[in-house]
Length: 247
Image (cartoon, rainbow, N blue to C red; front, top):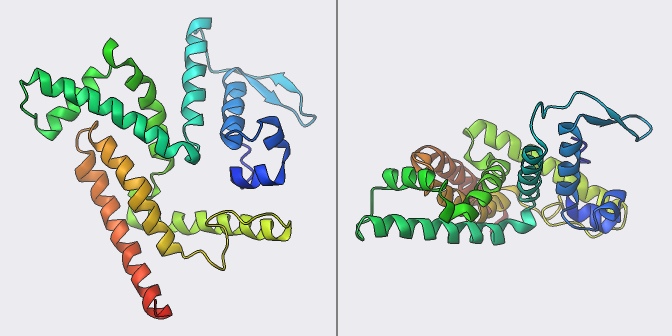
């Protein structure tokens, strides 16, 4: 997928070829969206950087269907830019609340059970009245998958957390060597992994997955439960670090 192993902050501060191509705007996400479009249409780059035809995957889709697919693909990939997280979550929240209000009104003001409410949301999302939520929902799901590591089985989640921060620290080392500003969470001398994980899970991941749980039955018992288990692990690790440092 041609990910360079750096984040957008590095690419922009470096004024890399990618940042110049995509005007400092969701640099890596735009690159991935463009790459995905090329692959869908059966275009590949050769070693000289020129496109050549390969086997596409669009089959017999009409031009209109291809355009709809590409629009949805681009929208979804761009939604994974973490700089958009809080604004996009706020938009989805407003749409979900509007749909929940409709369900409440249909039940004469009596709140349905959480499971039936979630099922109703998934059913009603196909209605014309909530087309904006439908347009937001697939990008929302892809973004949730992108930040889902804290919801995975404990051993897997911990291993990947260390792998992600190893990559962050490699970027920080590169930024220091190139006299660039060291990006947040990328300075190995100041970043505390347990503390960073606690903050990420508490303020970013958990609120977003609680919102998703309002839409998908059983999400709260299965996924949120695993998230809480992993959160408590990192809380204990943070407390151990605090005891060692006397903070």
